[in-house]
Length: 361
Ligand code: SAM
Ligand code: DTB
Ligand code: SF4
Image 1 (tube, rainbow, N blue to C red):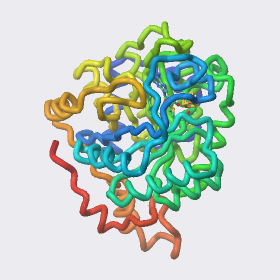
Image 2 (cartoon, rainbow, N blue to C red; image 1 turned 45 degrees about the vertical axis):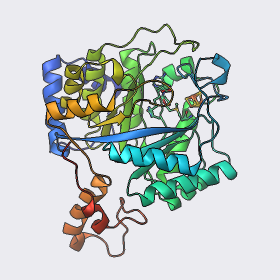
Image 3 (cartoon, rainbow, N blue to C red; image 1 turned 135 degrees about the vertical axis):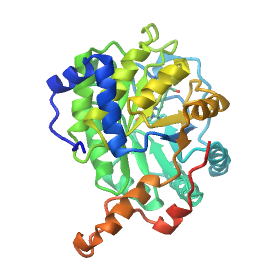
Image 4 (cartoon, helix red, strand yellow; image 1 turned 90 degrees about the vertical axis):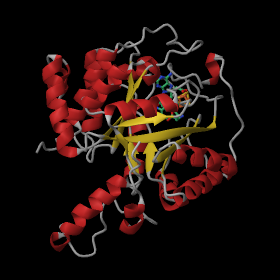
């Protein structure tokens, strides 16, 4: 069984990334099978609570107001509308709802209170809830945790060196600080980045060093391929080839064996065969639904057909919590008395998780 290391160097990661593809795939797939069921893929659905008008200058982002992109903006969503979309997502086989807002950071007040209510509402539907709202303080993370938030997404996006080429309005350190704030609660960390922004392989490796040396490593790592959007500084960037995505997924899997690796933006451009190779290389999560935040995503029926062809099953909500709790229950005679399991969350018992069944397709 491969162990989880927190001391990966950039040189080691570059060497992995550049291995002959068949060797890289074999190594990644072997590690993947040691830690995960290779036939199970988790599905998340995105909901954009507040679209566009953002003050930041992230060079890839259609939601930054300074770039005058052609996106549909919307007023802050109501709890009722979110609930309707979450029901739809659950019916479509999703185990997690991820709510995004085009904010630099979270501000205490009525909108944040509404987000907390949305978190409580989705939690009651027995779905994992994730938020991506920009920077948050430790206190805000704690309030989200109390509402039942399962994961917080905050990407580092690229290497520390390349970061300043893409974003100037907030620093790499600020990103790490938010991740640290989330880590102080029982919310799981979702953090990854984007390839195809003009960065080098060294930068891709640098990003993986930053993520893999976190201890604990993020529980999920989204790998986005840049979706070039007209009006943004990166509008003319050439799309990444599927081979680069496969290499990036495989390398991520090798350096972060336990994490959930999510195929994120850009998936709409890939063939079923390309995606199948990504799953073989260790990807075990996708975003489903016809839209990401502002850009189109793969058709749900197409995705379900792909799952059928590949014999993939979608993961039940809280499957990971359940898995951890069973291991911990078996080991309990060795656990220090009174210690709370790392993965325990308010409102979720083993019984409830057992009720959640993995849908066939
Ligand atoms: N405003 C919040 C923030 O910046 O953390 C949350 C939403 S933001 C859109 C979430 C992530 O989506 C970004 O960090 C970036 O990695 C990804 N993303 C945004 N636009 C993208 C694009 N055009 N292509 C690929 N990924 C993109
Ligand atoms: C992540 O890493 N990718 C998702 C989610 N986390 C929030 C967002 C992708 C956005 C792609 C561009 C858009 O649709 O606006
Ligand atoms: Fe704003 Fe987030 Fe887009 Fe950056 S990535 S411009 S912070 S919405």
